[in-house]
Image 1 (cartoon, helix red, strand yellow):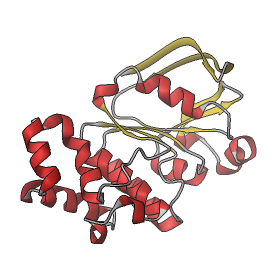
Image 2 (image 1 turned 30 degrees about the vertical axis):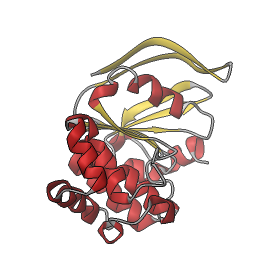
Image 3 (image 1 turned 180 degrees about the vertical axis):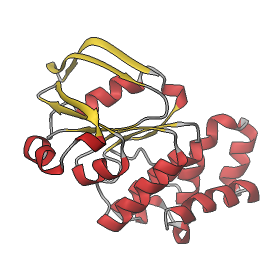
Length: 216
């Protein structure tokens, strides 16, 4: 599904990735781990660019419109699937069907009580769950996330990870939490100074070894 063959990449005029060769088939749940600056986000971007229209994305900066409500931000996941007139009407007066659909997703993320609150009034963790809800609203089989649970506590992180695993067949997630990567992903790719230094099934890996090499 995704393929890179001896690829190099620069970021801010510096070499960020060196000689990256990689294949990710459909149906795999992959965690990219490594210390800050290892190249996780750059690798995620390279893979995303191969099939951008087929991938639901949770960016590190969330990409929300702070002046709009939580409802409208989540609904944006379906903008391209609806005609312009429908989107304009829904912007002025939310329609019952999309309200029901958005609320159902927010319930799964324990955020439905904030349905019509402006995103600017939400906490950082709530905004991160809003970005995840928007990706779930977008649908499809593939989700990419750049530190998708970094602002959440342990309980919320587990909730979100379980929902993502249930909702999407294929996941590629840049993560700093090694315990979550081991618990919810079936393949771990480790990066160090822009190079892949580990690529193995989760069941073959030991937590203590990963923490020693890739932990922050």
